Amino acid sequence: MKAVGLALAVGCGVMLGAAARAEIRLPHVISDHAVLQRNRPIHICGWSTPNAHLTAHFRGQTVAAVANARGEWSLWLS
Image (cartoon, rainbow, N blue to C red; front, side):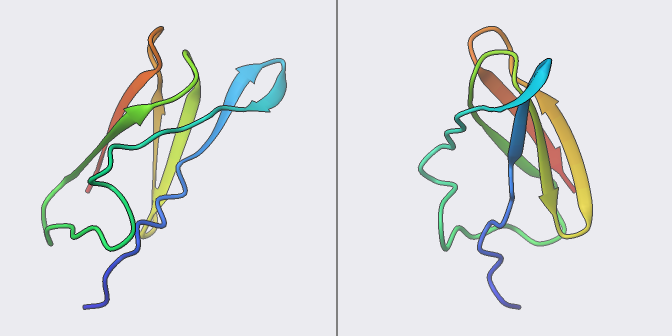
């Protein structure tokens, strides 16, 4: 199976009237050439602008998350 180069497109827009961009940071273990375990849920977490609304698109699924007041967010992909 070809490595999934985390095209997680953690696209994000902060809901502030007009769509804005939030800065997203992921842990160093989530990078190019990351290895994901097959047939197991994938936990993705990171940091962004506080209260940002994030959407991850991965292999046909879309999962949303909201960063807390400190900018921490977390989501699970199946």
